[in-house]
Amino acid sequence: MPHWKLTAPFAAFAVGALVWTAMPDAPAAGMAAVKIDNFNFAPVALTVAAGTTVTWTNDDDSPHSVRDKDGKFKSAALDTGDTFSQTFAAPGEYTYFCSIHPRMTGKIVVKAGG
Image 1: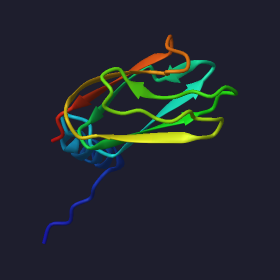
Image 2: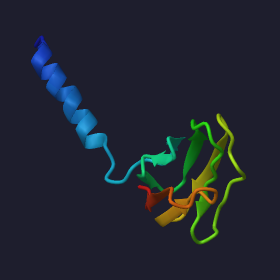
Image 3: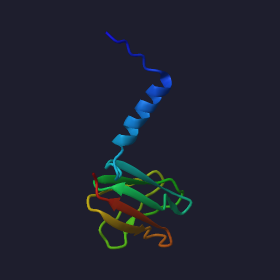
Image 4: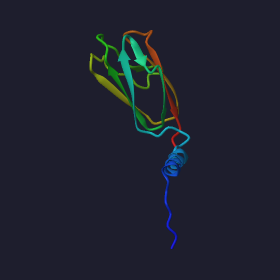
């Protein structure tokens, strides 16, 4: 009966190949975060899979809001430490801004899952 020995370099290659082939073309749905700080959204543009819930957290000393330019979603004023979440079911681009400070803008790009 043959005896096989798996060497460390080959094992690392095999595991890496398995991880590489298992990665989907589109991002997986889940959770994503946007930080509000210093009168900015970070990241300014975020790409997620359909079905992802994005949560904005206000880490600034001033109140801010999150409002879709087409009126599809909007938050109340968020004080320091407050959060707002929105689930993005449909693929597309969602441009948003702070209705208190309209120069603050961001974009969520939603890709079809799969």
